[in-house]
Length: 61
Image (tube, rainbow, N blue to C red):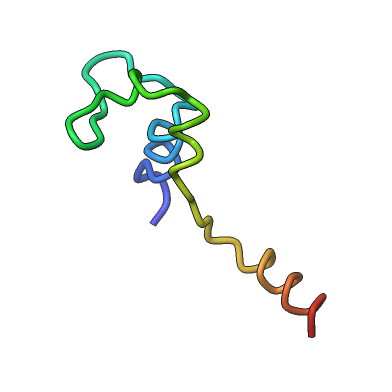
């Protein structure tokens, strides 16, 4: 599914973008109140790129 905002949500959660209105809460805490380094340390994102995994597998096989 393309154009549904998955990348935008990932960028908002990691504060590569800041929201213009409203807020994003994690455990009732606005993410703008969390230190950026700490926030990004706690979030992991796995992108869907089959070539990344294919290259990695070939390298180690």
